[in-house]
Length: 144
Image (cartoon, rainbow, N blue to C red; front, side, top):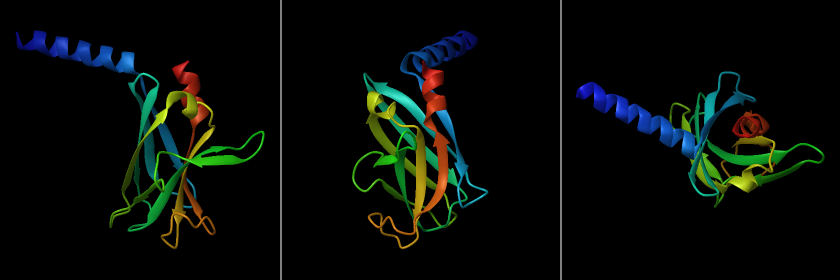
């Protein structure tokens, strides 16, 4: 009976993941070579995606913001989520950020970018440093 419960649970979990859809996007380091990170993109309800970013080996106790970027045909960007799109790393350089975005809106962007604000001010875009990036077009192609 125990094995049957395990099989049913595994089936339900697999079925739910397939129906809701989830992709993981690898985030590569910018100015920090040893950054390890990912962005999990999952459908949470009709037309809405939850993006959960987890990063390790960033600058400790520092402020970062998260952006959606298009590089072609012209450079444009918008913050991911709401507020000032920011998160603070802990004393070991680990950080997490979560936001919800309309699936159609997410599909308009090519790159997910996390940037460091050396002065700790998320509104100051001068002297920002790219900390991690991911190619959103790979996730969108995989979802089609």
